[in-house]
Image 1: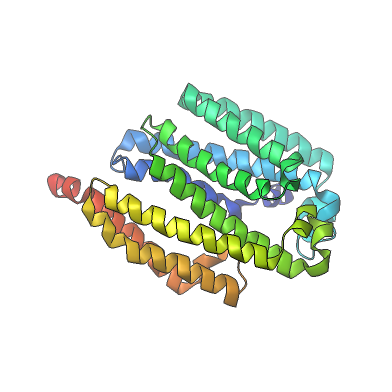
Image 2: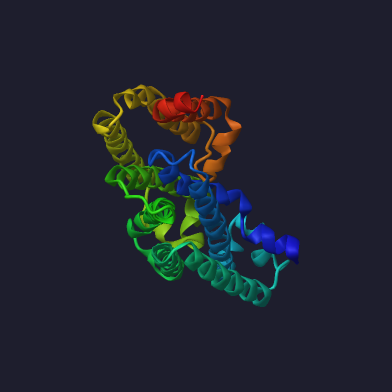
Length: 289
């Protein structure tokens, strides 16, 4: 049961919570040991919380998942994990994670509670509303990023909010497109809202989101306190366009984590991270040396 429970919490999806570390990096606290402790604690809390929400979501969608070619193999949908057991552990983990969040600081507890309530309401009925579903998903990523900033008591940048929202929206649209193509005429039976979308509509939305994201990131680098951040623009653009290529040519939109198996994407991400850290922290590193 423990194996099935852990699988239901989808640890492969926990990488999404890495967005919590963005505030640590761009607030120039990357070399601050005390900040690391709080952010790592926040990351663990959100992993447990998001994993518990995945269980609740699977309980709510258990009948629909049984009609999906892949999701029918999930522990709850397949019957390998009892609904009563899943519900008990989900509620327990949620209460523990919320209690732990209060020990970081009160504002972090409030943002964590807000995230939980938003995603819970999404799982119950907001996911059934056209466009609202993808906006809520993207807002969840924004709340994660804000939580990372609040955990170390730093100011939340407007650029952090808009860029995080657009990246999440970009990925959410790619996932909807994948679901629509894979499920075909049965898409509406699995997720009713999919019957309201069309591949052409989603392509238009992806194009618009990509354009705004490219512009927003560029403006961020232009107006940042460090003009050398503009050097990261080519890597950011390559990452976006490479992902679009993989979505259309390799159909990975349903599982964005598959980008970590693509050498081009992995190399791009590594180089972007190295350049960003070098630009932001070169002075501090030299001072330490």
